[in-house]
Image 1 (cartoon, rainbow, N blue to C red):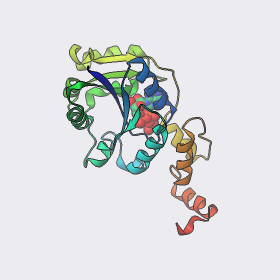
Image 2: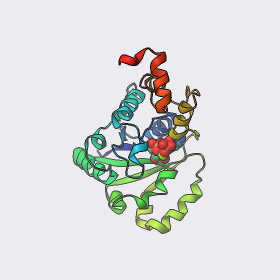
Image 3: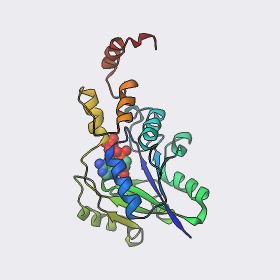
Length: 219
Ligand code: ATP
Ligand code: MG
């Protein structure tokens, strides 16, 4: 029997309830065997200086998913040198799972609208189907413009899927931390505590202050 696996790629800087809830609803809605979260090592579309160390992002993704029986985290993009092209990852995963598993790549509407800018995007559609989940600020109607850009055949492998709309973004979370505001209930508790402990998303000056308060000058 062919079973299906979901793969959710992202920078996860940090992972938040928008990602997690979307994955949960897709898992159930498509009857997937599991969802594999795949943090990008070096996101090709983001300046590296603006992206948090991959090991931190991996750790937060692990902390956020560890208690879910059908969520897993893959290190393949973190361990592979060079820019993290989804195409390379899907090829690797296809080999691991052979043809017994159908692969569904999960993205938000914002990400799918840029799919034609991804490296070798046509080949992506030969390996996986895409599930495009709704996200506040992006309407399903915007998808129709994509058909022109990528053609009927690729477009037919995109499955739009409405999920509970959560207006949460990693960028907004990073800003809140920088401004000293709470991020409770936007990310799972262990992720919030990890961000505090590792002093992520603070400016260098704020990191120095945080260290002096915690008596952590020696660590
Ligand atoms: P950033 O603000 O840094 O871009 P982000 O919140 O968009 O972060 P990403 O890691 O860039 O998170 O997103 C990974 C995937 O999850 C993308 O496909 C994105 O569209 C999707 N996604 C992110 N946030 C949500 C959300 N709130 N609801 C639905 N999908 C989301
Ligand atoms: Mg994003």
